[in-house]
Length: 333
Image 1 (tube, rainbow, N blue to C red):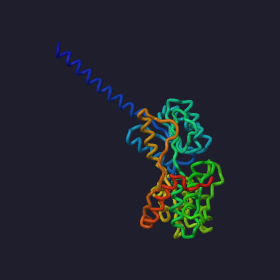
Image 2: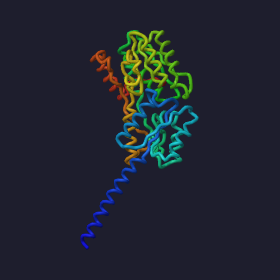
Image 3: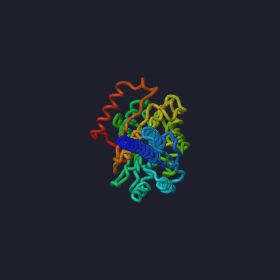
Image 4: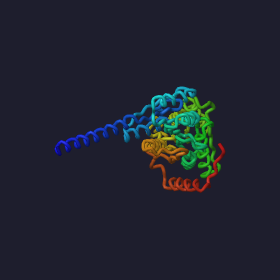
């Protein structure tokens, strides 16, 4: 009798362990993360790509299902988000300022889903929405200081996306403020794309021609903050001997090899790392609401490392401290 009882108990224990393991495995299988790009492609060598790489890094660590939808037209934002909602996704990542309204509307209608809005500042807290934001003015300041320290013509340029997007404006504000902090007399040619959000970041031809115009006006350093439009500016600058360019959002040395000849650094945001952090919080049931601030900095100097003197490095550190102390004046736009 005792032997039978022990046998039954042993079977129950084994069954419970098997069921527990199955439940854990099932949870990992069913947790799903979807990403909706802004207008453009996921491998844009910039913003969409950096965000998707963050999703993939989190997937590797947590073993969940992941999928992306490339937005072809701005009018499809709501529909693309809804596709993931209908498929029961746990986390939906939307990329870019332009998707802000669609993200908030979807979150209000679907309180059980965690929404990560990249570059979407939250004016008021909406449950289930984490606005992943960055201090673009900070990395812009560092890019401006670097440009002002390296220019020989005393003219530098910025090729920018639309001024309808606050992060783009903040990059330019920082760039101008940092350069003028070094040299108040420096000449800065800043040009915003004249189109709307549907074309301003997917127009490399305009980026190239705008960079070329600035170079013809004497600019010897071009800062490009305009997605794939900016990639066009970087590649154009690389066609000219003796010039430098500065990328944006990610370390573009890794994504735009065509610009290696001029790409001295990039004004970066810690997009991928911050996306990983937020997905992990959602996975653990600790997802925050409101604004979640990611890091901002300059990327490594790569092949130009030897050009960055101790004096320039000191100036960059001083600029960082001056910015934190509100001692660098930024223009409105």
